[in-house]
Image 1: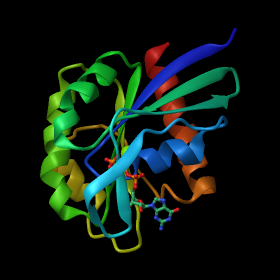
Image 2 (image 1 turned 180 degrees about the vertical axis):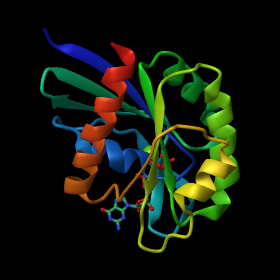
Image 3 (image 1 turned 30 degrees about the vertical axis):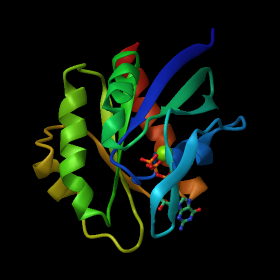
Length: 171
Ligand SMILES: Nc1nc2c(ncn2[C@@H]2O[C@H](COP(=O)(O)OP(=O)(O)OP(=O)(O)O)[C@@H](O)[C@H]2O)c(=O)[nH]1
Ligand SMILES: [Mg+2]
């Protein structure tokens, strides 16, 4: 029988959530990006509702829901996290300024006690290490993975390992 797994992707503004969903989905992803009023380098749009993608792994269909990173959408993040099976937090390794927001979102969502992992989105300009993140978020044995979300091959293999972790916890 086919199993379903609802995975919600969380993280601060510009961490790579939409790119993650787009680059993993087997079906044409649904995105809700709209122009930023103040575009930043290489970033002209932001998610205003949610991204949707789907990935089959053997007998499991993983539904992927990417959330918005902007502060004003915290109620949407809460809704999705609460109704998920598991969570993936994405943090860019070159964005130290986003760390405080990462902590805020991580704390916001922790109350739902969902199985979760962290992905460090490697950019090649990175400074943030897994050890720093573990300290910052006060993580004990939460797995931290490292990949570039624009490298589809690497992303897929990391995602398979993550889904393995989730399925062993959940069912
Ligand atoms: N080098 C490279 N950068 C990319 C590519 N695709 C996306 N990016 C960059 O990766 C960053 C993350 O973009 P998103 O995936 O939209 O980030 P997000 O977490 O969904 O952002 P919000 O929804 O605004 O919170 C942006 O700066 C993009 O320009 C790519 O194919 N190559
Ligand atoms: Mg997005």
